[in-house]
Length: 118
Image (cartoon, rainbow, N blue to C red):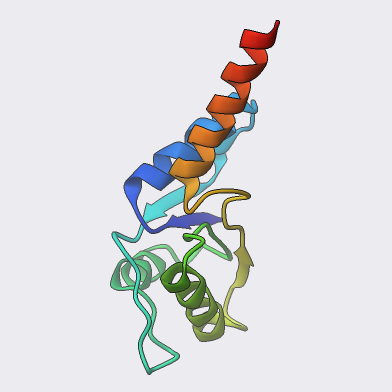
């Protein structure tokens, strides 16, 4: 399994959340795509992802953690369409906020507020 993010800060935020939740995050691979885009050719995938998959033929599952904005959602659709039938592709955007860094900040703020109430 490889987890994909638009930016390295989102990757690091996701791993931080996994550590906070005592999950074994280190069992999977992680890749920052350094941005995403949408093209007219529905078979296009980001260059970083293409190179990664060529160099890691053991990968069977991709977890997309792209942003909750128009480009992130469209890029997710395009990657799913391009890789359909070749890989299991799972769409896992952040539960809140624009990206996983926003989501981490939201979760830390909730925790801080809980601690202040005690």
